[in-house]
Amino acid sequence: MLKKNKFFIPVLIILLVAVLICAIAFGAVSILPSEMFSSLKHFFQGKNPANIYEGVFIQLRLPRVLLCAVTGAILAVSGVLMQGLFRNPIVEPGLVGTSAGAALGASFVFVMAPTFSPAIKSITGPLLVPIVAFIGALLATYIVYALAKNAKRVSIMSLLLIGIAINAVCLSGTGFLSYIARDPQARSITFWNLGTFSGASWQQVFIVGTVAAIIFTFSLRYSKQLNTLLLGEEEAGYLGVDADKLKMRVMLLNTAMVSVATAFVGVISFMGLIVPHVLRLLIDSDNKKLLPASMLLGAMLLVLADMCARLLLAPAEVPIGIITSLVGAPVFIVLLKRFNVLNDKGGYNA
Amino acid sequence: MLKTENISYRVNDKLILNGISTVFKPGEFNMILGPNGSGKSTFLKVFSGELQKYNGNVFYNDKKIALSKKEELAKYRAVMSQQPELSFPLMVEEVVMMGRYPHFIFNPNKKDISICNQVIERMNLTSFKERNYLTLSGGEKQRVQYARVLAQIWEKPTTGYRYLFLDEPLNSLDINYQHEFLQIAKEFTNNDTVLVAVMHDINLAIQYADNLLFLKQGQLIAHGKPNEVLSSAIIKDVFNVNATLINNPISGNPLVIFG
Image (cartoon, rainbow over all chains, first blue to last red; front, side, top):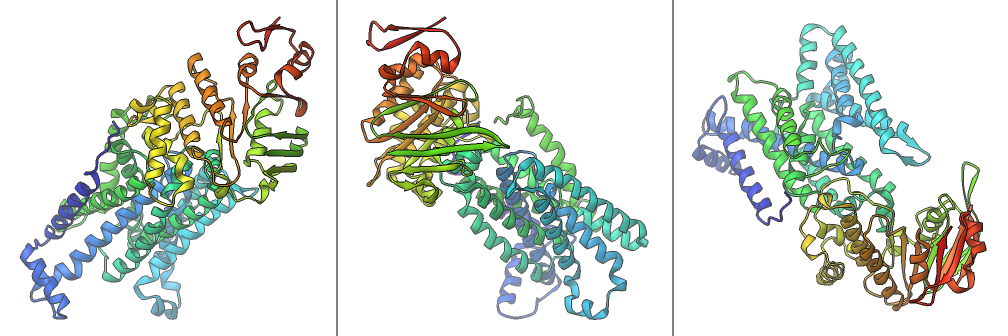
């Protein structure tokens, strides 16, 4: 099944561009390519949008699609990093508490915000939910990591098991907050847990995009070391890689970027799991190829999902998490069956 | 030259290695023999730099191994462990290329690629190059891993020696490959390589080894040329089996017959 294909990445790039253009064009209002160009022209000339279509494009559609692309790339890369680190194909960012912690933080703000002092609210402005969600994500992941640490080493098994426990704690915290919440707050919590890009702004694109750019660069630099981990930690050591140090650094990078993305858009499941799997079956697990490919495919798929979310019940919006799970889960099962991953005892064949 | 000084290693108060001092010289094929649980693999892990919490000292050419950086060590010391497995699909070519990782920063240069090709050819793996490693048989996987390990130290370093350590390298190999593996390893000794292998098959060891080292319950029982150290008594002592030594009619070496 594995094939060497020089055109794989270029094809992904072309597809991504096509999907981006479609996603910008279609929505509650359709935008013509000519309007996209003129809107961009006006934007760079510092003029106001000439009409409602140009306005929708530059203020709503473009930042939304871009935020979506960056988030998709982050989730997919994070899946690659974590699966590589844990040497386990079922790992995704949610397993070490990052998403659950963010959800708890966001829920806390939704329910308790009325009791916060006005000073806090005026300082943070619209960033109040993302900031607290980010702190929640970091804290939950840190607790998982700290508890799993044993005699300076972090074993994969204990990390996963403690992750399950901390996820349960965060989930019950979120559950309790929804229980004491009034109806509109409870709905906010539900929606946040299903992810949404409806609040996308240029500010968010800028923050998430910068974090992503920095961390992707680092991840690519670690791709060689991550490859050696495929052989196991002992072998990696013989190839000159300090596995403990590497795990620590990659965990840190990974947590930072997933926390930032989740803080803005909520919990989006399955992306981190499915994209790396598809690519491992299509190309192979060489991180030098896998990382860039997963950035592109992750961006593409999440933009597609968001487009569906906007179009399915237009003008209303379906939460994107519903789409990613609903489509992602069956696709995932089909892939596993088709490529015989499940038949192989404890193994992973393509 | 590799020197171990009074190496002891314990796990939860159980003494696994008990004061092993010995010297492995370059250009000689050293083989470690001993029953299960005698500490062979642990000893290899200590002098290869994998285990750190031991007592005693390991010197590579008079430099304490504890003072060497992992990245530096990886440029001239390669280790074949027991049955390394890959957790995800990867092309055979890239697995072999991993052996060159310590030598380049991001992309392999021409030399790295040419070394990989040489090793792949030497190991008769050319037709496997673009296969998925996970679809190979146990023996094929082992040949790929061996190629990776050899690629790591294929060229002589400008200073000092190369160090090649093999931990039961022949486990799932057919007899022809068993001999080929040892033959290739033996070729390395001509080039000033410190070579140590943990072995199971005494007669195979005798055929290729310049020195045999017997371990029993973490203690060094004997280390020397096969002709000098081998006897029915030592085999009885170390392995607790009765053995008779006869002359191998072809090589003139001793041949051990059990029972």
